[in-house]
Image 1 (tube, rainbow, N blue to C red):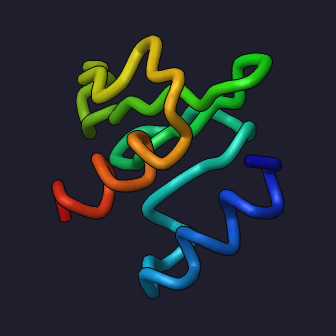
Image 2: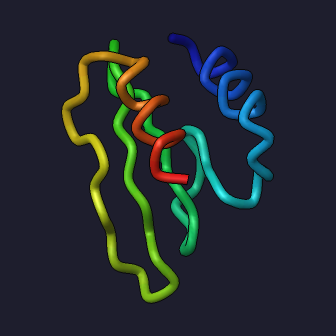
Length: 72
């Protein structure tokens, strides 16, 4: 899944862009999606800067998308 495809899939969930970042800056209180070669990693940075990993080595792009969708 490309960056544009990931962005489109997240927008389909009607999630405001202030709640996530795709291959961008790492800011607090948002979900971070990082493309790592052929898969996506996903983690959350809380308001105190603590990181909560949702999927470190998820090889299934749909798995990252569904993990995010199911947690919100």
